[in-house]
Image (cartoon, rainbow, N blue to C red; front, side, top):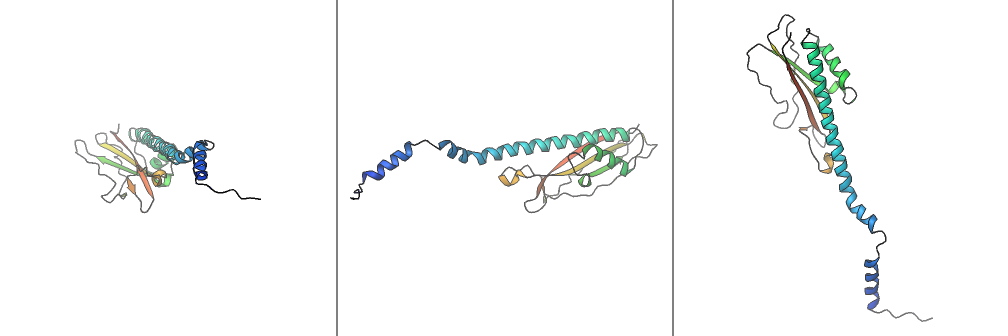
Length: 181
């Protein structure tokens, strides 16, 4: 049996035939686009969850603060339990930090940022509700929750708290001000 003689035209024909063949091109194109597509979908979902959780925390603080501080003085445990009952579906109640401050009427007050210059969360909060007979003071209620982020490893970063290493989170904040009745 004679072996075919290799010519220089054979590789050219093979290459043309390879480039004309479209079988599997959709799979290759999807493999190129899929990582970016799924990263974008996960980023959208994570952003939506962050906004939803922030709204849940905001609603819990508004409703709980209004219910407690417009009627009677309440203990720290009762207040934290009431907040927890409203957010426990989405958040770990042990990680919620609450700050309740009472300011005399006419007092100018500033609310400090709980994130320091290095991006760390500073937990220096207290619970100072008004006296039961005080109806002129202003009560400022703040709650914080560090929402863990997962998509930040894919290049999408909405973190504002640095917890060290690749652990980053978004600090959810809710604030309400009341005057006891």
